[in-house]
Image (tube, rainbow, N blue to C red):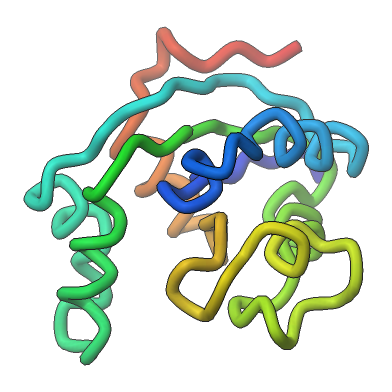
Length: 140
């Protein structure tokens, strides 16, 4: 089933100049970039995006981190894109991520783990809509 997922290359990976390598891993893994842009989220934008985690103890530090520098937000498309993307990312904690996955290669710890990916179709729809309008999405 062809679907779309949101991907964020987080400030730590952008600062490491790993954007190209990470996007290449997604493309090599069978996903197609259908939208992409670099943004620098404000604290308020990060809070809105991560609202689902508002009651979690890591919410404040996560929002601080996600607004500390530019990120690359993109929409990836492909067969079972959500599961495929998460497989390419690896475990949330880079120390537990499989060899060769994006987080194992570029992440530092559970919070500074280089990337974000949607976890379900409903989440993907909300997340894609948070950053992109329909005129910015281009299936290829």
